[in-house]
Image 1 (spheres, one colour):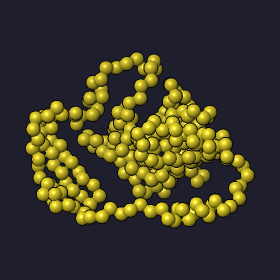
Image 2 (cartoon, helix red, strand yellow):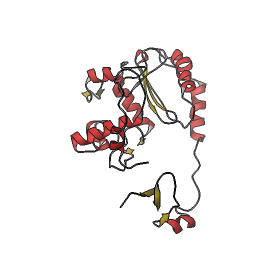
Image 3 (spheres, helix red, strand yellow):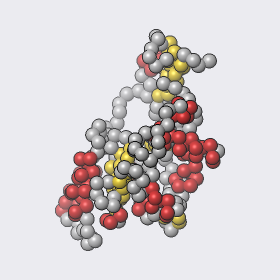
Image 4 (tube, helix red, strand yellow):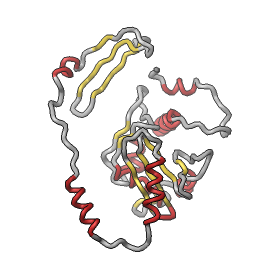
Length: 250
């Protein structure tokens, strides 16, 4: 465990580029670090300026590393609707509401096989011509150019996602046609079902009595394999922030 992610990455043995594909999310973290170094702003702030604000994506957050850099390869908190917007941007080769937000040539490259089944931050799908963006535990943006279609899946599962994608390829896409669907009885049943579906609210106090005891207090730890000396918990309305002190910290 270290708080110096960049130095740790650069200290890894260098393998011959272009010979063997090995996915590693920390490589995407390094891209985030490069963007921040070049632009002087975090990846999130840069994307807000270049993409999110023009696309009316306002409610978005990204985790920050101990070095003050957006994690890049993970930790993006964003809605399904916004994922669909990004998929539509790529489907239209970088055009959003008549404006070219991304160069069309770059979009083409990122969705083209570069090595293995990988483009530039995009995966090639089992379905011919389709590409996808993957997130942890079943978050997907599926882009299907020959159907002029974007499919977004957000879920929490420990499977590899092939079963979910297979449903799209084998069940959804064969039913897609250029002929508009007629509104039938099933549509009314779906609307009724949607109106009855509600997630229960969590009951209880914002901060439990136990949390109040430990809130803001430094907890000293026994010697452990992680090298953690102590931790502090700060309970906020929507999150708990844990600060860890390592043995070598001053």
